[in-house]
Image (cartoon, rainbow, N blue to C red; front, side, top):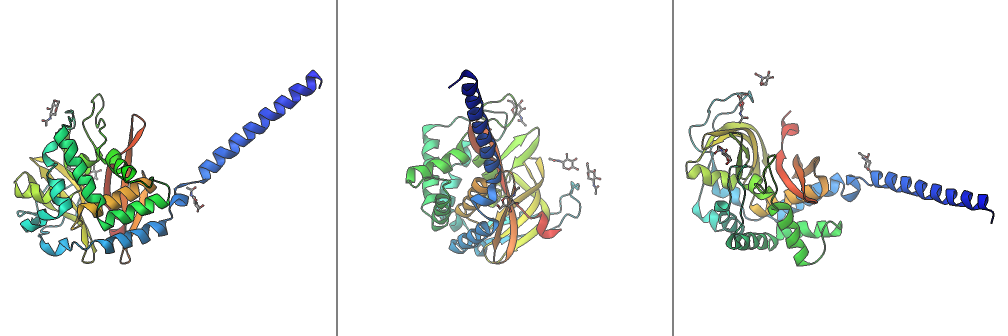
Length: 308
Ligand SMILES: *[C@@H]1O[C@H](CO)[C@@H](O)[C@H](O)[C@H]1NC(C)=O
Ligand SMILES: *[C@@H]1O[C@H](CO)[C@@H](O)[C@H](O)[C@H]1NC(C)=O
Ligand SMILES: *[C@@H]1O[C@H](CO)[C@@H](O)[C@H](O)[C@H]1NC(C)=O
Ligand SMILES: *[C@@H]1O[C@H](CO)[C@@H](O)[C@H](O)[C@H]1NC(C)=O
């Protein structure tokens, strides 16, 4: 082969591989989220996992809605009474019992580092195992497995939930491990004198009972039959306000974890369309990437589209 021919051949090969590379990129771009799971698949699964929830919690709760806000800007208090009161037997449900045990593990101030003790690590473990033993969570994990979004071993199921929900990350610039998805969504945090997070009705009910949380009134509401009510509310924790938060009243922790984890794995940072008995709603989840791990920044039900 002459030198010129050789160089032409090399150039040809380089060209071929760059065309291949571009094609791969194009393919990657096309392989978008709807190919991982279609909207219809998500809605069908959501229907199935709502049906699998037989805790019947909503019937054991007393919900006192009181005043409704017509303006989001209002700082009024339209609710002198608590939103939620519950029978003590509710806290005996395995997953609720284990969740409540972790409430004292966290620093609410999102500028203060979290330190996880061995006991607390064990509490996380007990809680995740209680979630994984429910029919609701098993169904969800099976679906994620069928989509290659988690491996098939129990260790991998555990590690998925533990890493995305309990992995620590900085919430504010210049801080270290001050936050986790679990703390943000299932408890609440304090940032610049504002309450942030707080999407768990159980946490809300317990904080109302202890007098630390003041419910101010509601904004919008979507009833999910006998299973749950999605409600947007205004509130204050120890005087620190949150102007708009959404909670799924009556959903046990396994149902909230199932819906939020499903959406985080298939629709992070975009709308995740779900449904129960033909009532459609969205879940929004946002990711935070910390040390190459993609963790839950927040997750909540979004009912703006249902009511506009
Ligand atoms: C994603 O893929 C689906 C099905 O292939 C297609 O209908 C949709 O338009 C695509 N969306 C984006 C944002 O590329
Ligand atoms: C609410 O507040 C925002 C920003 O503070 C303002 O732009 C808006 O006009 C206010 N809306 C009402 C209805 O007062
Ligand atoms: C709530 O809204 C009021 C009025 O728009 C505003 O002054 C206040 O800073 C907001 N509070 C929080 C915690 O966002
Ligand atoms: C939160 O912690 C930071 C850093 O320790 C502190 O400066 C701030 O005052 C605390 N905020 C509240 C409301 O306690």
